[in-house]
Amino acid sequence: MRPLVLFTILICFHCILRKSFCTSEQDKVLSITAATSEQVSLLQNISSHNETVLWQPASPSHITTNTPVHLYIQSSSVTRVTEQLNAHGFSFSVMLDNMQQLIQEQTRNDTTDPKSGGMNNERYHSLEDIYYLVNKTSQEHPDMTKLILIGSSFEKNPLYVLKLSGRRGPVDKAMWMDCGIHAREWISPAFCIWFIKYAITFYKEIPDITTLLDKMDIYILPVMNPDGYKYTWTTNRMWRKNRSVRQGSSCVGVDLNRNFDANWCTVGASSNPCSDIYCGQYPESEPEVQAVTKFLRSHKDSVKLYFSIHSYSQLLLFPYSYTLEQVPNYTELFELVQEASFKIRRHYKNIYRYGSGAKTIYLAPGGSDDWVYDQGITYSFTFELQDRGRYGFLLPPNLINNACNEAFAGVKTIAMRVLEKL
Ligand code: ARG
Ligand code: ZN
Image (cartoon, rainbow, N blue to C red; front, side):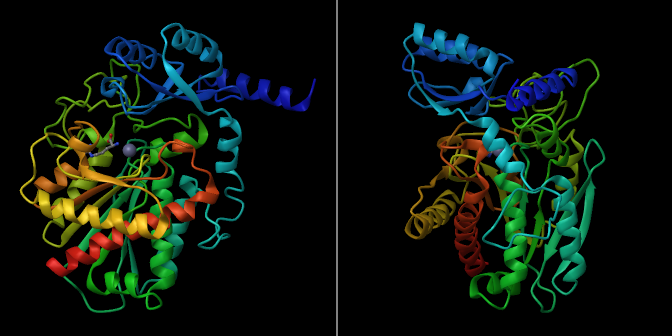
């Protein structure tokens, strides 16, 4: 037997034994477009089964005609699903068929030396590496950073916020940025880590980051969902929610971005614990959400600007997502994301669509950005980083740096403008 075949069999056996999700050589991601309402219901049905994972949109209920659906299909079901699609006249194409290779690339040379790799040679970091990096940064730069423990996750992993400040006296303004609400969106924590490195390395070297850190404090939560993130490294790369378990249900996890107290669990969220957009038992039922809301409530007066970082699809969003109604400062927020999108297009040649969440993608209540907005922090944004579907959640490590640079251009453009207004 060829070693590769043996290896694959062993890996699969291991997956079955651990009852985990088995990614294998023949898995595929298809891009499928429904042309009629019959095709929409068929596709909703197909994507609700266990051997598939919906990448885009976040839930079968959001599937509509003429918008490509990105569906991950386990090898054992590829034939059956493609036959079904063909039989019903769907138009579809293969988005990815080298999953195993992409996943291996993403987890390569981990833990051996988390210190290696400068700004141009980024890679994805495991949860342990992220804790190590954040800790080390706070110890090596006590003049610019402070490590704050804001709570812990369901599985008791710590939730650390790193506070970045310029070398100056106290200021009354602050910005917050969280990453990794959704476990599988690896570019998100990678961006928070990149941002921290960039700030420490280029403060007093590059004007943009110097101005930002001189004028305000920046709170960064690199991983809001550590349990889910860890799970994507060890067991199931496609996991989205946290890992909270609940009596009476065998399904695990709550969608943390449906658990905030903002028109909680209405249209666009699900009360089914097995859904990927499950809202939880009540608003703020999850310890990760409680930690963030507690911190933000007690820093409401200083925090003027909020960013939540997700992937993928390249979007710059602002509230509301829980209603189609416009926020009072809609025009102001629209102009901010428009300018940010123009900047990114000019410098990086990449397209970022922009607008309010509900109008730009779908109704999604219980989100952090909407909750923050209703707390009076009216500069509140959700970014969806690279890419637009070429690799989806499996963005190769050599594209991290470019994705982070352009995301930073967006954050910087908005932050600078907001500073002028305050
Ligand atoms: N893709 C994100 C989600 O489904 C979008 C977040 C937009 N904001 C929101 N409050 N839903 O969670
Ligand atoms: Zn997300």
